[in-house]
Image (cartoon, rainbow, N blue to C red; front, side, top):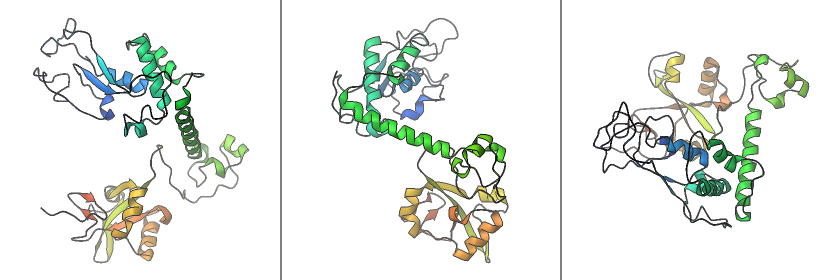
Length: 306
C-alpha cells in the first residue's frame, strides 16, 4: 500500500512488486504496468482493475483533475504459446504450480482465445462477452483439454453435493437435525421433522469448501485445574485459546502433542458443551516441544532457540 496506494510516493520509477493472486481483490492499489500469468478471464478482469486505478501525472503524482498522463494502460499476460489444438500438458508444462491452482485448463485456453480475438478489456462494454466466452454453455473445447474440463466439472458437482449436505434447516431451530439426509423429502421441504430431538448438533458444519480442518483448544494445568492457555476463564478465554489446523497436518503431528486424558477430556466436553468426537484439547507445559509463544503450533518440529 505504501508503494502502490493512492497517496503513495511519487518516486514510483524502478519499483517492482511481486505478489500472489491475493493482491487482486479489495486493495486500492494502482500499478503503472501490470504483468500477470494466464488465469481465468474473471480473475484477469479483476487484476486489470489495479492498473491505472487513479489519475496521475507522468511522474506518478496523483491528480485531482484532468486525464492520466501515463499513456494507455497495458496488461501483459505471460501464457503458453498459442495452439489451436493444444495437448493435455499445454498449460502445466509452463506453469507447474499454476496447474493446481487453476485445474480447468480448458477455461484458461478459452481465456487466451477470447483475449487474442478482442485485444482489449473494456469495462463494462465487453465484460459480458469476455465472461460468456469462457463460462458460457456449449463452448467448443479442444480434445486435448476435455479431460481437464470434465475432471473440474466432476469436482464442481461434488462441491455442490457437499454444500447441499451442509444446508441448515432454519425452521427446525436449535436441534441435532441439520442435514438433508436426516430428513424425509416432505420434512426437508417443510423444514419440520416429527423426530427432532433436543440434543445439540453432533458434527461439524463447514462454512466454506476447503480442506477439512481440526479445532484445537490450548490449555494449561494449574493445580489440577484445566484453564485456557490465554489466561482468564469463561467462553471468551477459551475462544482466544482456540486455533484451527488442517486435518492432514494434525494426523502427521498428533503423536508429538500432549492432550488431555480420556476422562479429563470427557469432563471438559461436558462442562463446555462440546462433542468429544470433534474436540481436541492440548496441554501446553513449560518447555514443551510442540508449541512455542513465538512460532505457535510446530508439531514434530523442535522449537528453535536463538
